[in-house]
Structures are given as C-alpha cells and as structure tokens.
Length: 303
Image (cartoon, rainbow, N blue to C red; front, side):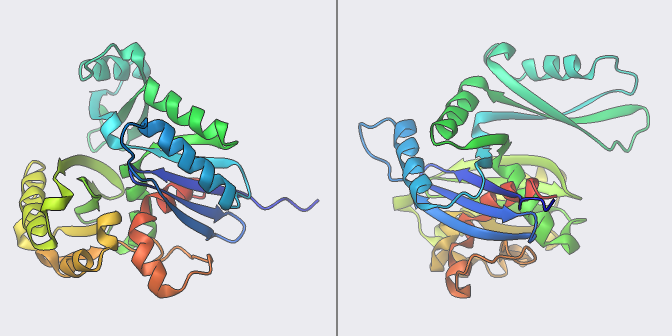
C-alpha cells in the first residue's frame, strides 16, 4: 500500500506577524509559505488579536496536515548550560533543581526540557536545559487547537534559527556565528558553533527613532560585547554574522548588512533548502527574513 505524503508546518508567531512554511518529507522541500501581519491594536488583548489573525491565516492557507511545530519566544524561557558528574543518578531531578535556582517563580509553574550534549570531559555530562512558563505554553497550544492545528513540538525561535542556519550553511558550522534576528522593537542574538547553542542576548529600541545607520552602529557594539562574554574577539573578522527578521526585509537595512564587521550577510533560508512555493526569486529574497524561523521549525520535523 502506498504511504500517504507526510507534511509538517513550521509556525512562527511574532508580535506583529505570523509566518508559516509547509515542508514535504516526500519531496524534501518547502511547498507553501505565507506571512500574516498582526497589527497591534490599542485596548485589545494581544493574545486574542493574535488568535484572530491565526484564524484568518487558517482560512487562507492550505494546511495539508494539522501537525505544526510552533515557536515560542526566547524571552519567555530560561536557557541554561549545566554540567554534572558522569555518574549522576537522576539527571532529570538534577536539571530541575539547577533550573529552579534561575527562576523567579516556583519550578512547578514551568515546564522544562533538556538535551544531553557531547562533553569534551569524560568525567562530566553536559546538558542544555530550557524552562518555559507553563501559562505561555498553555495559551499557545490552546490557540492552535482552537484553530484545529496539532502542536507536536513547541520550540524556541532562536533554536529554529540554528536549525535553518545548519541546513543552509554547512561550511560555516565549525566557526563562531552570531545570528541576528531584528524586529521592529527588539533584536535577538544567538551564538552558535558546531550546531550547538552557546549563548543568547537581546536589546530593545524605539523603531520610530532609529535608522539603518544608527541601528548598525549600536548593533556593532552589542555584538562585540556579546561575543566578548564568550571570549570571542569580534573585531578580527573571523566571526560569522547572519541577519534575519522583519527589519531586514527593508532595503536600507539589507544594504547595510553587506560586509558588516567583515562577515555580514542576510541569512537565506532557501540557500540549500529547496523551495517549491511558486514565489518569484525577487519576492522570495525580500521576504525570506520573515520566514527563517518558520523554515527552521519545519526542518526540525524533517531531519
């Protein structure tokens, strides 16, 4: 019996837009993409407003499968690298205790997950742990289920950026890389090397009071400071810097990226990942920065 085609969609929910990328396992390609604006409306609950826009997207976008991998903002999570003895008898309880030391509320108000990493030290175990506030996850999954979508995984937006980077820039994976995700009011930065999350940071600004020149000047200082915390000299030109997010859909910001700090370029989520969405190259390049997280989420289901 012939198996039915398998599809999964990456769904990225930002403050002012929702993006979706539907991936086909059978064709190993992204088949459909969409971006739904979410305007901020005064005196209206933002969660309800987002839910309404998701409903609108659901009515227009042909989900071949209800299965989605959805993003949650890294702002809503605590991320921690944890080391423990090789013979630790209860890794889960140890991770839970370590995370509880970082949280402002009781650990029972959070859901957490962890992944064991390869350790260079044979006497220890290295773990990457993440805690999400339970209410944030509950609100997100409830919103999806109301729209007849099945959230099989909830992942951090910055982890999805590492996924899409790895899939498209394999030759750069051994190098220290900062992925910059610029939005209208906030920029997130994630540091990665060898496919591993190393650190993250963010900074805020008033969109109305910045331009591409002042933004890039500030960003250079923020990246230098951020890299230095991990012992990396951002001034020697060896640091790879990739840009994505809605800010870089604008021509003036895209132009400012070229050669930034010696290695800057806009992250192309379709550099190696095949896109069969029927969008012309010019528009695909223009709006790809708003699709990078969604593509990274979808790829998690395919690799």
